[in-house]
Amino acid sequence: MTASEATALRTDRCGDLRLTDAGRSVALCGWVARRREHGEHLAFVDLRDASGVIQCVVDGASELRSEWVVRVTGTVRQRPEGTVNADLATGEVEVGDCAVEVLNPAEPPPFPLTDATATDETVRLRYRYVDLRRARMQRNLRVRATINRALRAALDRSGFVEVETPLLWTPTPEGSREFIVPARHQPGSFYSLPQSPQIAKQLLMVGGLDRYYQIARCLRDEDLRADRQFEFTQLDVEASFVDQDDVIGFLSEAVLDATEAVLGARPDPIPRLGYEEVMERFGTDKPDLRVEPELVELSPVFAGTSFRAFAAAACVKGLRVPGGASTTRAALDRLTEQAKALGAKGLVWLRALDDGLDSPVAKFLSDDEQAALRQELAAEPGDLLLLVADDRLVAQAVLGGLRVELLRPPVSQGPNRYLWITDFPLFEPGDDGQPEPAHHAFTHPHPDDLEKLETDPFSVRAQHYDLVLNGWELGSGSIRVHRPDLQARVFAAMGLTAEEAERRFGFLLEAFRYGAPPHGGFAVGLDRLVAILAGEENIREVIAFPKPSSGADPLTGAPRSVEPDLLRLLGLALRRPG
Image 1 (cartoon, rainbow, N blue to C red):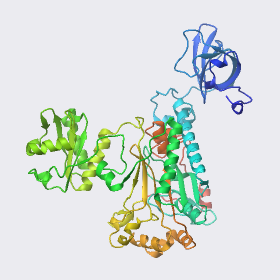
Image 2 (image 1 turned 135 degrees about the vertical axis):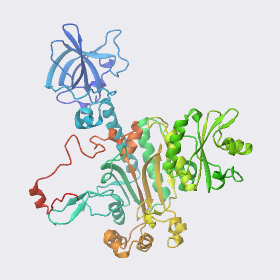
Image 3 (image 1 turned 120 degrees about the vertical axis):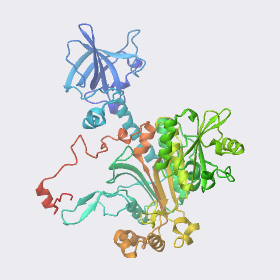
Image 4 (image 1 turned 30 degrees about the horizontal axis):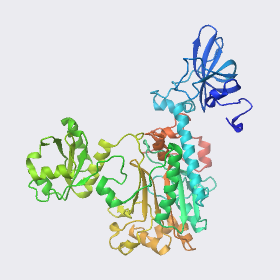
């Protein structure tokens, strides 16, 4: 323990004591994790603090109970032979001759604090201050802090400046519902809570800051799930006079540093693939590179087939499921229904056996087609082969979805595999079929595609790049539009009139007219990054005070109704839906 960690009440932390401390007098503070009677006059107490657990030998007459807060003074000594606990870092020693001061008695905890507990999540969140005492939660929050430190250090070395941007912002719809805040001094007007510092950081570039970053709190009023919260944290980055390679370089260095800080080993340099190649090989723009089988183009195999379902299709793609031949017929029927739900007309399955292929459709395929199919998919006896014959995008999406469903390992199963994806489409069809930004309205079109902006907008590529880890999108970034004339062309391609663009983004467009530099940036979802590196499936496990999927906080009771007087002060009136 360092001198700075000692306090008026303690000389050491529980988890720091080792055999080299034997014979030393110590004062410890913490919670009673467990008490075990040892005869009539002695008891063993496991004392826990943020650093770990130490065994203390106390007077059996003491009334210590689980989760009482105590101060223990005593002498560190080697445990008797045969009592060493190899599962504890402090397992070679104990504290004896103990005097105990009760700092605060406690009610019995609402659930066991062992890591193996199967306590309902709502109960854990209701008593989150108790849940946070668990070693797993302590570790997760410290992993989070380690990642934040490593990211900051990497960006500081590269000349970035940490700047805080406003939390009270102007409503600028970006595709998700915003939280709004009534302005008391301007009745009928509202602030919004930022979904991201996107516009603010671009204004910082116009202001000449050159390189900015922030560990930013962001808010979106959207449905919650395992990887989403109303409140979330992102590493937000922006830099001037850069291209796509520069930004990817900055971020690669930062996330690899963070990974090494947590796991102790530096991952390989992050590979880069284009969007079209990723979709062809994996059927998703969030591929998990830990999964080895990729989608295989089988259209040439069946170019002259007499099997009508394949002959009539624009594309035939396949996926090998290693060892999947034992899948039951009922499970295969469920996969077929799942494929249809994803948009396919059907799903063809074949079991690879020692002497051929077993499938209801095998009789429609020639011997040469069956042999070529096995060769293209590298099929071994015992594998399951899944084929989709459909439009190319449908075939990609369906098999990509099944690849994730059938082959994706748990988050905790390494190694961690990062991937950069580039050359995304600038636009995607909206509900009305008109172009909508695939990223956001300020993404710079690829320079080679500018002439197609008005004539063929859906073929225009974007200077947009995503970072993916183990099948999870960690974040997105882009080179931004910095010239008003090009921004007007992008708005026009979206069907946004000059008047509407001015109303929504006028202050940014005005700033561009005062000399905006070429700039680009990125945002990393820290909650997801921490969860993956901590081996957690759910981001709620790496957030101190998350909301459950209902959005209602069982700890504080939020959201709550407010007094009518406050509503009147804000110029608001409630009206029941319907």
